[in-house]
Image 1 (cartoon, rainbow, N blue to C red):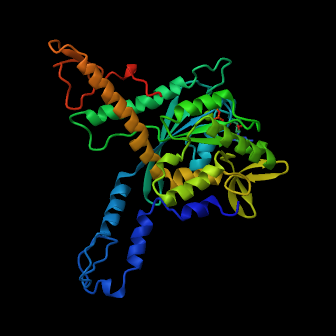
Image 2: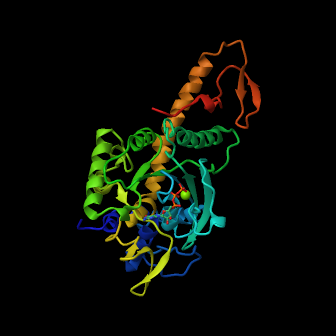
Length: 388
Ligand SMILES: Nc1nc2c(ncn2[C@@H]2O[C@H](COP(=O)(O)OP(=O)(O)OP(=O)(O)O)[C@@H](O)[C@H]2O)c(=O)[nH]1
Ligand SMILES: [Mg+2]
């Protein structure tokens, strides 16, 4: 590979607000600069002497300020066999203890192994930007002898979040800002076997890629040689293609030629072969996150050692907004349309002289006239399965 992923992404900076604002100001011609001081909002400049200046570019600064005030939300789910390094990788990603490790040196600190899906939220702040990060851990996925339908609880969890969002959205007195618990991205951990995908991996990704953005990674990539890693990556890409599995970034959602070019490069690299660690070491006077072995230290953020940095760039630095947009406009939308269609069909099949009993969002039954509401949605998602 000649160019780094960071370089590729830099050509297509997704979070452009801050930079565009500063570019527009720094490009301002001398004549456009204010001559008379006037009351202004911090960071703004007046264009009093520029007759043609309307000020449309100021919307960027307004959006930036609003976004800074509101903060951001990102919900990441990690799925994979127990001990593949899911919690460690989340810690590496956010350089803080966002997901507690299940394997601790001190047995008293050890978290009991669980098969329940758990969400842990953290408020992270960097350079004044606030982010609520929720990690949804699914310990022990596929650990059983019989793993038939083991993807079902995960599918249900994802649908439940869509349903919660839908119920908030259709509420007459809905909140100004609906809390977003929808899973924006699911990192799927592939065991570093070096052979091929297991039927379980194929089955999981085939089903789940239709309801959520899947980002597959090869876990504990330090256990593979470079040749094994390349071969494994190639094999996985071929298997994904052969099985019609569309992982993130999905080709069909590329917005333009630029997008396609950048995303094609990412697609050629997927799945990222990652190494995780939350241990800091000093290497050549620099503090790094790494794994110390007898023969040297693996630096997790060094692209010469592993592909963790590419994953981080994709999830946080370049595609975070796109990941959220696709969740809202594609995955959630598909769910919403199905639910509304189902509800309409349900109302049409109700005899018109009988009142329909419609459970409210809080679970209390409520007697309603048989005609559908403006939104036409009945709150009975237990029967709904957003599965294709
Ligand atoms: N060699 C290697 N070991 C790793 C890596 N990431 C984590 N580990 C080690 O693997 C063990 C399990 O890591 P965890 O992060 O707890 O794994 P997990 O997937 O969260 O496990 P469960 O919570 O049981 O599902 C720990 O001893 C980690 O230090 C890695 O990239 N390479
Ligand atoms: Mg864990």
